[in-house]
Amino acid sequence: MYKEEFNPSQLMTERYFEFHHTYNETPPEVEFHQHPFYEIFFFLSGNVNYIIEGKNYNLRPGDVLLTGSSDIHRPNIHPGKPYERIVIWLSDDFFGHLKDFYGEDLTTCFTDSALRDYRLIRPDNQNIIHLKQLCTKISEAKHSHDLGSYALASAYLTEFLVLISRAYYDAPDSIKHDITENQKINQILLYINENLTEDLSLEHLASHFYISKYYLSRQFKQFTGLTLYQYIMKKRLIVSRNLLRSGSSVMEACFQCGFGDYSNFLKAFKREFWKTPSNYSNAMHPVIMRQS
Image (cartoon, rainbow, N blue to C red; front, side, top):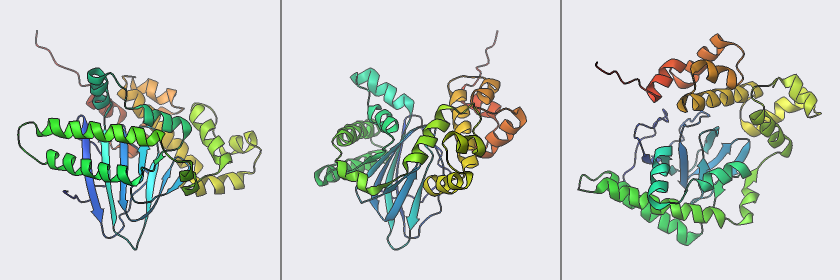
């Protein structure tokens, strides 16, 4: 199977899906990030725990993680073992195409995992072997120039998604032993995500949840990997980006995600996504010039 160098940009350049098989002898530095698309992370080897939305997943080879367009996440990669993984990025267009063709919505496991806030799948050994075989076929088809190679890669990927979906609903309860979390922080994260346009200051949250500001700050950073301010800022920017992708104006995106100051929004958006909101929106919805 073809292996790639790690690309820290985390940007999807193909329309429907991307397949990346990456191997590192030395642990790479990976910042907290999020994507405007679905991600399947198939862990093959290494000493890694993965933080997603306040939960810390202690991974075993063969584990699969699911993340969507609003999930802040980052792997903690420890030295001692080569770090190998397969990452598959999937656009809404890809799932929409599958639903039109087959009449089935294969995003269900992503949606359910977000609602339950448990992103870990632990397939049994037989399914792990099957998933690896499919990954080899996807990789070979993606790098082939023969007629129908892209169609084959898409077909193998569809089979991969079906297996992942079935494994998600068959996941054993024992996987919860490899998840570290804090129920109070989970409640705070839920509150933040449901009230992004409201007052989310440290003082307000500490008062609302009847805990000290010091305890909240320390526990929040411990379980999410981010300060309270960093997390809220990233969440508001993610919402604004998703609003722009769905066709909202820049001003609507600014104020509907909780920014009270337009200039601060512009600076924060560009810092996070490397484009101004207007440029991002124009890239998502280009204006077609017509000759009269």
